[in-house]
Image (tube, rainbow, N blue to C red):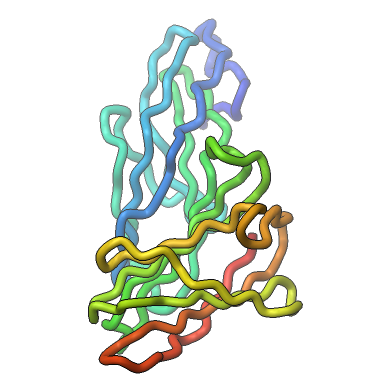
Amino acid sequence: MRAPAGASGGGSGDSTAPSAPSNFSSSGHTTSSVDLDWSAASDTGGSGLDHYAVYVNGSQNGTVSAGTTSTTVSGLSGGTTYDFSVTAVDGAGNESSASNTVSVTTNSSGSGDFNQSVSRIDGSDSDSTVDELSFTFVSNVGSNWVDVHYTVNGGSQYNYRMNKSGDTHTLETTPDYVVGDFSSGDAIDYYFTYENGGTGNDSQHFSLTY
């Protein structure tokens, strides 16, 4: 059994947990899988980094060897939002705290116009110490513009034009631009309006819990 974060693993003398993996993000997804990437953790306790543990909705889904910083989680349901995180585990069984959480909604059948994802930024990025969201919309139809609309806990709807770079449109909810500083348990409902052939098209609605 793996020792909890900060606990000694089996009397090895190493009771120091590794650092948490950083820059955790999703690089793509399909109807049934999600690609995940992160920056390597470090271990100073002496036993050395052993592996990474990947969590889906709070439960461990699998492990990845210490020399690998990416994985694909498969066997998922289409049109469903999942929360992903990753921890680092050393040779003594000490487990780090979790990375930031990334929420991804798998594609639904018939949603081939775009891929979308939302990342939770738990006050750990370089430009802010508040809890934010980062929306990403990748158009498969050459959209000239994309708007994101979202509500928090059933409140007023926020509507923003996303930043375009090629076919990728992004928006981060930094406090000086969009409402930010979410709290654990906040229910976020969101959808996109995207240009296709000169007309605006509304996507299905997606939801996640912060």
